[in-house]
Length: 280
Image 1 (spheres, rainbow, N blue to C red):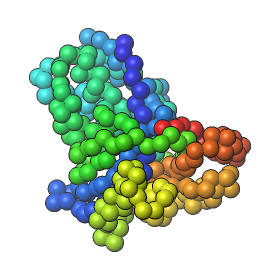
Image 2: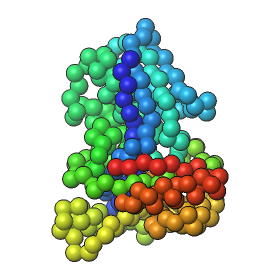
Image 3: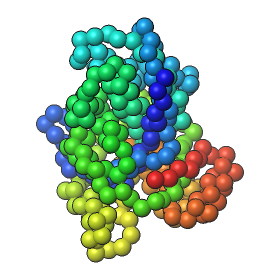
Image 4: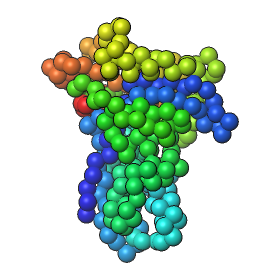
């Protein structure tokens, strides 16, 4: 069995430029993968078998099963594989767990079945699965554009400690689509916020600091009940900047002070909240 990690991601910037004729949204986003991850094991088997440690996880509803079918149909073969998903990233949390699992399975089956697909081939398949899947074939710090299929690796972000705060109740049915449905033309931006962030990464920024931005920030606090109260608790624990991860509802805070991060994390756990630490 080969074992690989499937990391969570944070959108450090996430802009929607417009709605495309194909119904998708044109986005521009700087994305960072973090050390909070799922584990994916893949090995030979006479038929495809997919297992997961989460009882509420359904292979038929995940991108993992779609990934297997897509590759099988593409190569005209129905080879087998045993796929075991050890999930830590909660479902529909805004951290990209299902997309990351799919990317890990794409890479794993490419090796297991000796398909010899190039990165370009894998990206093309990943784009058919979902807008977030291609970025996980790279990992690290990347710029994504289009509907997510255009990816450019960036200079790595400086090391940061991440505190994640995940609501106890998550809406799992078509959450991302529902969040995009909350957006109107007034939420669209021309991509300049991300450009400023890129300049900051390259040391060209005129303003110091990290200009994090997420188009879903305002809609998330309207859509997810209790999220504002959760943010207030996060700040009570000592977080100075609290942000929405992806399309929500996970909240995160970044710091370069590990001692402070441990203190915030401990206080959140003391409040009985679901909090995790990671870094990049």
